[in-house]
Length: 363
Image 1: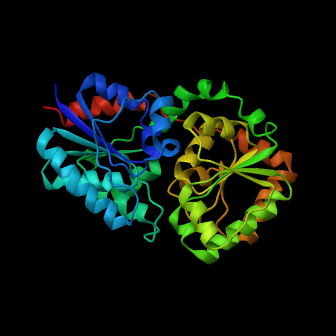
Image 2: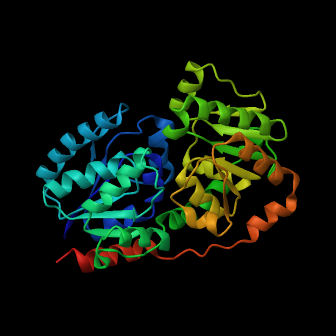
């Protein structure tokens, strides 16, 4: 049985691979490596419990720190694992510091690299995630883009077509797996909410939180919108620290809560009127659960959803964000219009990934 190592480090990676990991365990001698970028209970361990993912075999304990510190420490520690385990394949996912750590280290040791969710591009190289995506793709031997746009991006970058397989989104199967469990929770009563009478907010990306003028504008937008509807905001610890350091305050009508478990967050998402977010994963989950999504970014790697009219790219400009949100609040027909747009999802993505890996890399 061939030996495969999967390396991940953050909540979105574990949640979006939650349906694939048990299948990899069954088909291969499968080793899980956690970089340790997310390490608190609310940001990490709770997801393993709720999604019934087994514990990692190794944790690299990169912790928090600068991009260079996380990737540098990750490479040093992951190389030790690869030299010890001698895997046949290394699997990486998406665009955090984990895939660039895995892809660079494995490719230097001439170990084939698989990149799931390859080819996503925002075309903004200020974002660390964009650099991670590009470098990981160009170190990879097998690439699995989630949609046609991502596939075309890879072809334009001269990656050979025989390395690229359009299989769909692992997040789709993860959402199907978790929806029933999430709906059993009673989060509305816990937080004194009414179904479709609140807005869910996530905002954590460095391009928003590290730019003080942009952050001020986003806080102003959130406060203004909260005058019309309750907003619930599971806040990342890093964002909380930045707001406090810069004395930026949210209205009392914004309910700030601790980071949520995957099932809890899913429950809040499904029951919301719409979601405002700078997260790529939330954009995908919102489409799958048919919840309108207002994107708090100037560009998105999931542009196909915007082009089809399903998600709304609001930018980070308050003069655009506030009118878009208020139109959704004041015009029920607009909400219904967004919900009627259907996005077809490819099925059996996890099964296809394993079959292709066996055919292409396992000899």
